[in-house]
Amino acid sequence: MERQVSQSFNPTLLQTEFLQKNSLLSSRFISVSPEEYIDSIYGQKGKLIVILGSEKDKEGRIIGKGTVIRVHTEDLWKLFWRSNAYLPYADFHRNYYSSKTLKAVRAFVVDCDGVTSATLGKVVKYLWSSLPAQPTYIVNSGKGVHFIYQLDKPVEVKGLRWSINKLNEAIQNSYAELLEVDKHPVVHPYRFPGFQTKINTTATVFRVRGAYALEELMKLFEIKPKKAEKGEKEGKQKGELLVLPNGRRAFFEWVLRRLFKNPPIPGRRQNSFFALGIVSYKCRREVPYEEAIETIPMVYEDMMRRNLHIGFRIEEAYEAFQKGYQPKYVRASWKYLCELLGWEYRPNKRNGRKREEHVKLMNRIRLARCQSRWEELEEHIKRLIEQGYSKRKIAEIVGISHDTLYRRFSHLWK
Image (cartoon, rainbow, N blue to C red; front, side, top):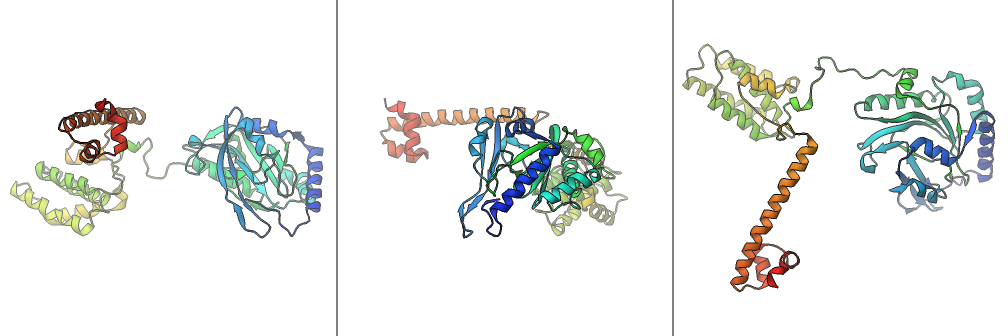
């Protein structure tokens, strides 16, 4: 995305081709104004994300780096003169442009580069019927053409990311045999109608038909929703899994302490060593296999001291542990492990609260603790003032900067 016209093309010929494509499209489809197009795609959305590409001089040196800006919809046309301004057909969380923050998709785009009027005429006249579905809009973007498949409403990607990506790929592949397609993800930005192109023309748009529902497009392009993987239990909640991010030795040691304090009863001993193997695997980043397996004799000897080893050989303990120390058992739920061990474990500190409620509670607690600390510090500073210490010395004693001392406790010297 660079604001530079290639020197190997004659701008006059390119502009002529652009006008011929406009003439061809206007003879078959309805011309749409840029304002109407923006309103159709984004509706009442207040702020839009605009990606400004890098700028180069005639020698190819970068004279301006690309950036991302947020503009109000009514101010968008102040940028129409730029040939390196692009907009994504998508929404993002907090307007933060990234594939990871993708929130909703508004349209799918097929970007075809180097499309002449003759080639476009053949596609529209003779090959149009070979497509699974015709686009909602066609944008004459300069040297190329964009085929826009608009959705009747923004579709949230949560839970549908796989299906949306597959559909985007299928739509682009359907044009691969007809034209030269630049394949892009759904978050990719494109030049919009009303903006200047690289060949010093203004991009135009033409309506072909109405918008699509996501289910309709998926059916037309034969995309089936992704099914749950074989063996994966439906309805399994993330909170039910024993989540140990990055591995924690402390949890492994907690399991050991519970084994010593409440050793497994006969009949559950193999299960307990099996569960111990799962836990040690989850903590493998901080508890190596060689170190974890050394705990087996310790636990077994404790069982011997309590006369709980009868009928259970140490070889069986090693076998149960090694079976548990495998990746395929990592998805065992914490409830299942606690049932095997006869324990109670609460990995979620929210105690049933929703995330938003928990965050608000923690913020109130932190604020109260912070306020309590300042109150204690104020009493300490009062005592230091009574003892005759200077402000500089007091700031050094209590461990805060001079500015903070003057800003928060200036009333103590009045």
